[in-house]
Amino acid sequence: MRLSALALCLAGAASAQAPEYTPRAVPEHVYTGGWEHFVGGGVAVFDCDGDGLPELYLAGGSNPAQLMRNVTADGGLAFRAQTPSALALTGVTGAYPIDIDSDGLLDLAILRVGPDMLMQGQGDCAFTPFEGLGFRSGDHWTTAFSATWEAGATLPTLAFGTYVDRADPDGPFEACDASRLYRPKAGRYGPPQLLEPGYCALSILFSDWSRSGRADLRISNDRHYYVRGGAEQMWRMEHPAQLFVAGEGWQTYRLWGMGIASRDVTGDGFPEVYLTSMGDQKLQEFDPAPGGPVWRDVTYARGTTAHRPHVGGDGRPSTGWHAQWGDANNDGRDDIFVAKGNVEQMPDAAMRDPNSLLIQGADGTFAEAAAQAGIATFERSRGAALVDLNRDGALDLVVVNRRAPVELYENTGPVGAWLTVELRAPAPNRRAVGAFIELRLGDMLHTREITLGGGHASGQAVPEHFGLGQATSAQLRVIWPDGRVGAWQQVEAGHHLVVTRDPAR
View 1 (spheres, rainbow, N blue to C red):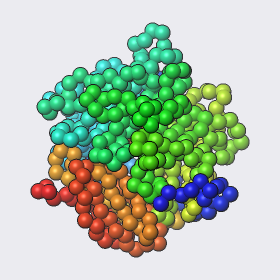
View 2 (spheres, one colour):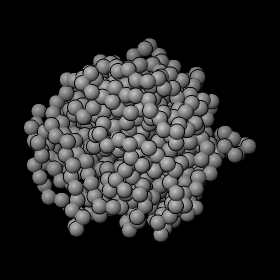
View 3 (cartoon, rainbow, N blue to C red):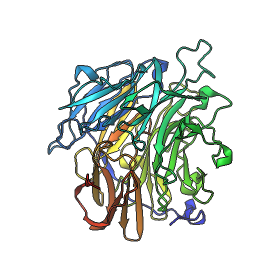
View 4 (cartoon, one colour):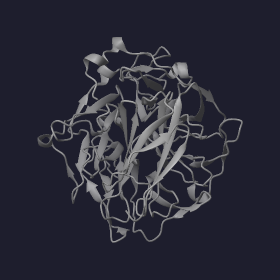
């Protein structure tokens, strides 16, 4: 049920208990480099050795990227640096785990200042460059990624978001590169479609926003370099892809776009979007009534601005980067984590800019809780992941910082009940990207779209996590990417579920 703006006034915000995060040691890793690494700095989170505990692949910029093996036991989160030579790359801005060849082993799409790379998982965290796919990447400054499986395709459609054109001698201002869209044909990738005009993308996301069965591509762009004439974009996935325009309901937004996070928070089954930027962060609710791609800004009504530092004494505007939804206290309501930090030495933006954790209250408004939770540090944060790293049902946190060591936090409570869900389907698209999970929890319906992309240069391939509050059970069903609707089934709290689609259906 959609909450009215009247019900969402800040004065009526209900208090919600913040989780407690405990710092954990992690091998030192720093994302660094010159101006081409002012942006980026992501982390890929995925299980590459099959033990159920996700690893971390950390972008390094001018430093080599590193793989951290998850060796958690009973003493709290623990990781060991163990990077295979194929992944010890320089120039890495971010990475996204994806099963490209649908063999059940996770691969990596690696974003770089330089040629992007598709690395094939071999098991036990070994990787080799893909052969035989036909994928070719030029020398770009890549800062964003998303993927989807289109109907009838045996390989995913890949989108790489690019920033300033490195080859333009008149840059960097008004010299944005065109993003690249790779659509497979006959089991191979040919030359990409250039998504022009390009406006310096920093986050992109495929999403079936209309529940039509087709995922379209949303791009968040940085007006610092497109300066004028540009805007946020959404590409309709026809052949070739076409931009949505005002006549179809698309509204023009111009912001210093950094990250996209998508989640249905109104309970109507359609995904909302949270957009980070330099100056403010926007929460936009989807409006299904017009029948087009229309989102309404509810930032102030919901209390999600996070537009200035909440501690530290610096009153200048915040700079938001990675954003991610997740139920950090398992109370049955999704919260928002935002990684923050000055680009470098931007004088009009806060230098002491702590990360934000916006906890959702019972009335649907959000309140800042990062300081109370113990994660309000002052480094220049970039990419991050809010994920369960030790399979205890609570969302932990890893944050990549520019020119400062990565931070790792274990969620040590207090939290409510939980449930995790993994989807498995026949090839292609073994991980069911594009599916929707529906969870009935009392009189609330939680709808979760399985997407691949978004955030800021940071991706995860981990089970979907649901907080259940005090509930001991819930009702769950899956709507598969081809539209087949599974049956409702009762599920119990405290379990890691794997829902497998019958290959014959």
